[in-house]
Image 1: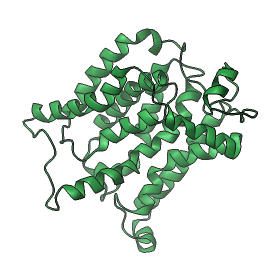
Image 2: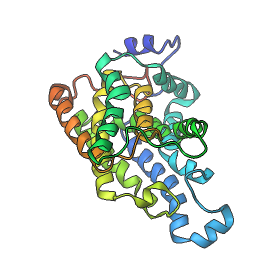
Image 3: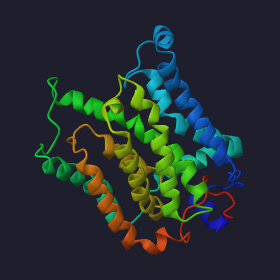
Length: 285
């Protein structure tokens, strides 16, 4: 297995260090320290923090850093065990794209259809209305969004998912990550200049758990790809999709239940689950 992974990563030297399971605790602590440290300063010391760094918003540099907390933590964990070579091998997971065509259909077609169906259920539009600035501003926002939430996947799916799947079945790994993912967002609900401030946290938490479970079979089918989870995450926040709350959440719950049932042998068993953070490292479970 180790030789197979080494050939896939095209490594001609000794494999980089393996990330141990206990690194999951370091990843979690560092993730929350970075993200909650920044958002907590704006919540508990709003005047002093705003005076020093400016008002927080979705475009503020500190908001980006807070959003990148899982990615920063994940990269620190990878480099602490694999060094620069390990990070290079880790990033090759961005090139993993091979999986069943139906998983690509879920990401590229299924998710947009959920938003459209949810919007129509509440008599809304097929697509989000264009802003006064025109389509150019939407395209610019789309690319800005690619540098926000999707970057989190370097941590959630890059590090947390493989380490959890060493010990629990994929469905439980997804559910745990979804719950932590939702809790990690909690401070954003108390920041008045962010989108989360107007959302319902319970519905958001249910949605996070659902989405984390839904992306799990895609992740494992693509052998630990970072590319597909990043595209999956990007679809969730693209500004072209209409506001479909709360219908999108309930449709996603139904879709996820069907997909879990159809893939129950893999979802409730660790067979075939990706368990390595750095390709080419020791594959012992």
